[in-house]
Image 1 (cartoon, helix red, strand yellow):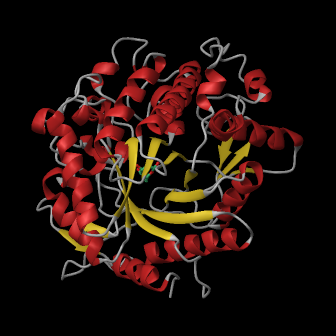
Image 2 (spheres, protein in one colour):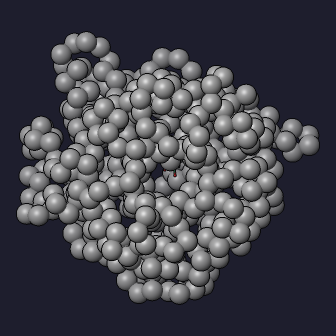
Length: 452
Ligand code: FCB
């Protein structure tokens, strides 16, 4: 790859509160559904939890120094709702103060903040009983209140706020597959949760517009799936189109087009009657957005249901088949062209500016005798995916930035600490941070505005 990125292209790294902060009881923070989930035996590999994580809550200044020393101009982080509102409703100023310090710290170092409101750490107090959490319609108003509190406190210094990170994961992994908190396993519930996530996004986006200074950007981040049909057989093509409805259009269409696709309602009618959608919801959900955040790790290949194949989360009308070729240590296929195709599809269907808000890979990172990690596999993955972004831009996609996932090795949800995505190695015994080769490579990419 030789040609450069557009002038002003925003280069960053991304993180999420529960994955790095630790300090789960500090300064009045309340428990989140991920504290409960990770403390339930058997839920997380190695029964790991986020109690300490990278201790970023206490080491934030060192971490911001690291970002600056690598010359990374932008940082995407998330605010822990249970720090700011421990019971999901009442403001805890000490929790809010942490993000005040963090944002001021970024600005002092010349780092441009991109704030995510919800990266999965729902206050446990809002997930009570069978119909709590994202199953409760009321959560949309609770979330809008939280957005206003954060917007009032930080909106004068944070130029861009994202409502939700990957509502697909919250809905399907949290309520259908049970792999994420709160660990429910009922497909019908996933659709109800998805709708309330959409509604919460809409209410929060509208509330932010009336709270933030003019010119502040409002966005949402989706982990859009680049869905490939396993073959040209009509049943595989239909299964792939169905997976696209369930995975992508369930969020894209209401958020950007003003309503759910009729085919989605028809094809899921045996799972849910959609009676949780009320009059006027469509208008609430469809708010003007300044850009769409796109997270991408790998494409998915889909076929018609067949014995022995893993069903697509939330539905019985599509199954996964493996994509041949190289895979990461997560078992995820590596196919960077999927990212080009995905960005061009969003451009074609929605014509909205985009930001890649997450992309990166876990590797079997082993420090050498000097504690340094030579992560050539990660550099190779990043090189391929940056080429894919550049290709999409050259083919007409309006992509304005790229946030690498992630700065630090951290708590990788159900996988615990075993899976390392950082460009900076973290020794989880001493918590010391050591930049990997990929960190220096990325610094060079940024300095040139193009990979070497
Ligand atoms: C995404 C999450 C992020 C991280 C990466 C690997 O789905 O948003 O927190 O875990 O996957």
